[in-house]
Amino acid sequence: MEHSIYLYIILSIICLLIGFLGGFLGIALGAIRLPVIIILGIEPIIAASTNLLAVIFGSFAGLIPAIKQGRVPLKSSLVISIPSMIAAFLGGYYAFQIPELYLIIIMIICLIISGLVMTFYKISDTKNTTQSKGSIREFFVGILISYFGGTVGLALGVLRVPAFVYFLKMNIKTAGGINLLLSILVGISAYLGHSFSGDLDYYLIVSIVLPTILGMYFGSRFVKIVDDKQLRKILGVTLLILSVILFVREL
Image (cartoon, rainbow, N blue to C red; front, side, top):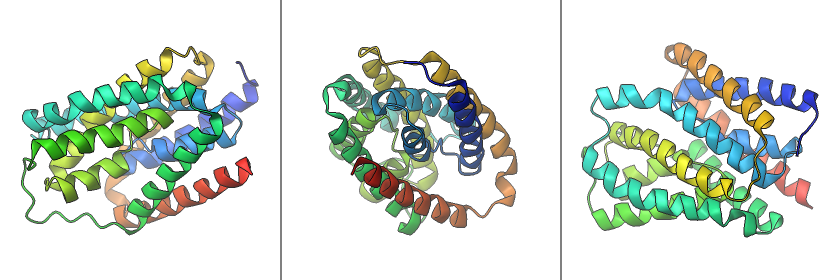
């Protein structure tokens, strides 16, 4: 389904700004971009698949430096990524079978949890180890987050990083590095799952993905002059507000 050229232009500008903010934090901010896309009138299932592409390309920019810095350990990455990719694909594949109302409800829940985490959860880099503890926990944490993320079109890195630190006892820098890799792999798997439904708008893809990449590229150049903690709180509150707007929209 094609939309007005004006809608594509508005989306491009908004995604450029969101990408710019994401560049500050090193997060693709799909949790903010997705509800905005839906609020502007894009069908949820199409918005989800398009948002995943933006997450994939947005996360890729930060992965290479993380690998060079040794923040992406192979063992933990493999243990988490394989089940996560399968779960994300299944979530994306069955997403189009879920009634739109239920999809929105799942999305709102994810937004509320993400908003609360960004606003109130303090991730401390204390005595956590570089490697995580417990392959079984890695397996289930990866599956749970990735399945729901694949369903609604979010990588859910804002939930994954705290989960890695709190449940798997990872070092915060390692958790961030693995999350970048998983955002790409999970995003690709979930997108492939969504693609089977045929709900793709290529004009929408261009108007969202390219501005996101540009925004994250230039935003990352200003990362040193931004108060990371304050920005996280602002974005967390924004997620909570967007969840309310989505809820009211469905009433």
